[in-house]
Length: 531
Image (cartoon, rainbow, N blue to C red):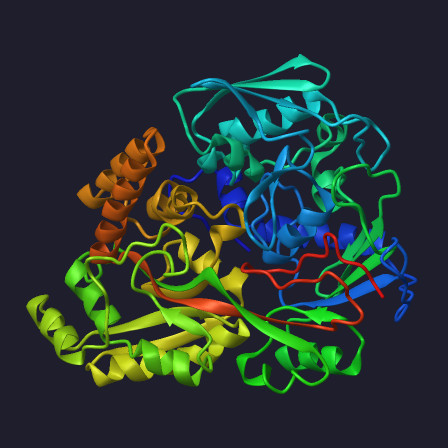
């Protein structure tokens, strides 16, 4: 089968950015081989002293490997929170930065220089010490353009990283960046020796310094972890073992929770939230996680922003939230939800206005618009799809639904074979500041390679504003510039959120002391025991 990628995209870059669809298939055999029949100790209980087994139901399969420099898959990313550490990590519940491998938050030496000191006795899962050279290596491979790291776009301000001594690392910045101490959380520290020896094996069998070590993974089945006994960091494992069941089928996931096969599940179907309240605690947490509408602006119809705006105005978002999501979402009134500390209400808010939609389409000369819309087969997205079609039909628009698995749909997007796409997204797993959240969708790969916005004056303006905000020392100035970007991307609507959803999680309170649901995709068992 021929490889599909956008014209002009170098092969390695394409594979990195499209989630390693081919690479994931290639490593499946390796993952399965190292997994094999596993003694799961199903149902084993214990205390919060590092005994017992935690079993969880995850909603997404393994679509990528685990290399933290490049993985964007929801499940491997969640796994990496337990396997790897950064100098600084984000608290998975609050998304506030906290020192992990470092003894404290990076220390500011001057406006463009920071230093971080590693904790004594930190080791990787093979027993080797974590050194400053490993930290330098981890950042340099992210910054190396030929590696096409997904994390590189979040640290463009780093100039050099050097080892001062075995335990101290110094960062020199290209310009002052006030968010530096928390932003370094995007980089997980990896063992130089192991990665250089066999990067493909490392991607399939990750080795970190976190509280749990990787044991095995079988695609569309399970991931197995064990407590790393010599971990000496701030968040030691409180269970002997974890087994993550990869259960993409919604009803099967709910059944696993109700039967007690697992002690927690993510992505509870909205219709089942109340039904699970009796045997388990269920909570839906407001997230940045959005459902967005993205257009192929290389298509002359969607190059006209009036057409893009019209399709937003045509959507009865409140009906979608009320019926398909049982109220578990907030209609987008800005790029981030109102609960975000840097929320700005956009100058353009897309309320349900069929008359305005028809008017804009007429002005654009498209009275009989027909197109195909790609959506993923993620349970809640699939539930929403017919309501999108219904809303557009009320405005005289004929949309054909194309629903399939996520990798297949993104392959179409990345080969330029799409008109409109509706999909979920949540870069807040990498960080919750507006600069990072905006750069994910509006700076670099997405506008340049996915929705074809890179040649527009609007895109150039967005880049200028984000770069200016990044270099602003004053917080008020940064917020004002981010507000300008919000207004601009809302008006342009080349890619813009329809809603921000709540994430329903279910868990057994008695079995998992310390567990808390997350405002991002995935589950976290850091600081969680097994009773």
